[in-house]
Image (cartoon, rainbow, N blue to C red; front, side, top):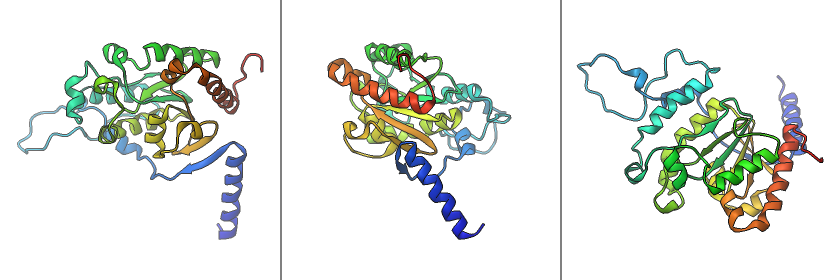
Length: 259
């Protein structure tokens, strides 16, 4: 293809993204889907003992027979690996259990929070406390259910005292997050709160300045908004969140009641 033709195609693509509301492109190297499967659990990799000593790690070879269409099966195997993870010594010692994620493995829409809280640590399910109940109501107001979307966090373990994730902890968990997103292949991600937005997009702007517009991450359109826990403390922030949800539903082609 001639250089001029390629330039015109690229320009047309950028103009289309701008009209669709995308204001920032996040530069990343593509996620290697084969590498994603290397994160999956070693349960299926147990074989006869070998005379060759090998160093045990959290990584195992790609699962034989796994297919791109078998999202739930691949998520289940990955969840087994996450459940045994000890990369963060403090979190592995203090957690009750890991909180992997829940919802539709083929979801168009993913909600991304920061880390499990006490209720989530006890039940092993993301967003089940008061903030989670509010998130459920927000999802239902969008004419969806939790079974239609996928919900997960930056961290899979509860930080002691519900503190924010440390950078090294988020780094240890990033491979699992990338693997989940590569398996689910959502069209949209909603970052709930500054911690999720900053970690996913590697930006540090205040969440109030990040909301109300779309970013692009690995081909996925990302919208940032306030965390439901923040709304419980600051009810005045609920209208802006609803504005964000209306924008999101419009872009997803979902008509809301009364619109």
